[in-house]
Amino acid sequence: PLYHYDYGDRNLQYYGSTQTPSHNMSNVRASIVIFYGLHDQIAIEDDVLHLIESLPNAKTIRVRLENEQFGHLHYLLAKDMNHLVYNRLLEILEEFRQKRLVF
Image (tube, rainbow, N blue to C red; front, top):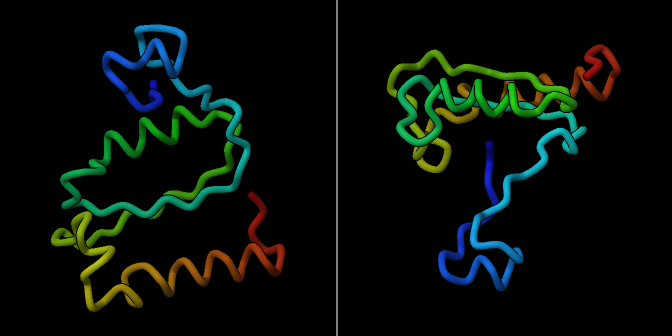
């Protein structure tokens, strides 16, 4: 499960419980495009797949970036983001806009 922020000793103040509550991911009904890289040390593939599985009512497209060097910081620093991410994202959005892609 995915949990709310853990305030530690202040959880009782924020949540009325000492335990951090989990998010009800079935409430998410959005269309979501998830990009992830094979070399990402923060969003590893198993975690991405778990996230997608935890969104039973969301429509998701996952795009795995096959570049083995692509990690989490590349989203901020990579010079080839147009080629790796932005062009594909724009294609997906255009397909959705023209109703060729139905989430």
